[in-house]
Length: 187
Image 1 (tube, rainbow, N blue to C red):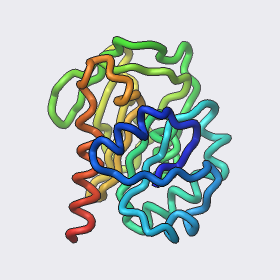
Image 2 (cartoon, rainbow, N blue to C red):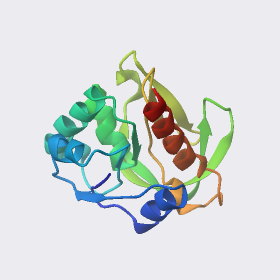
Image 3 (cartoon, helix red, strand yellow):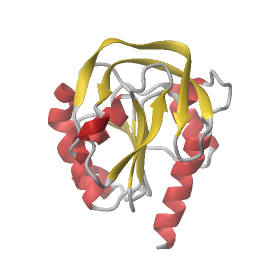
Image 4 (cartoon, rainbow, N blue to C red):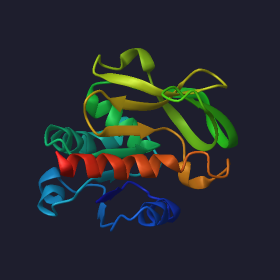
């Protein structure tokens, strides 16, 4: 299930390319409605706006999905909403990150990815709870670019892996999501 907060069509194509049968639901869909669809995983899309405002209806839904051990992958606004649901905080950036050629380091592999970004809010790294680790960092300003929940199939990134500025630097994230789904089904 892809929760549409303003999803780009290419994200849905990337999910389909890695073998996902995608059902798109509106942003204000409840956790109960999503769980009734019996998804193998939930994708939280990008979109415009202040994550705190969208979080008023999205955070309770995301918290319930996490409680149900649902594999979750978020991009951009989805990353910010997931972070809020986990107990972190967000803030408006002075300038934001706009455009392609934004270097981001994957802290789990050490690799640097060239990313495309378009956001004016960021997750405050120091506010991440102990069970959430920073997985990616901006090499421009050191801001948070990704998180992963320890021991759960839940992760997100601030940038747009579907935009292909690298050109394929970050497509592994879609495979990671599918791997998390497969591991959760096998458990």
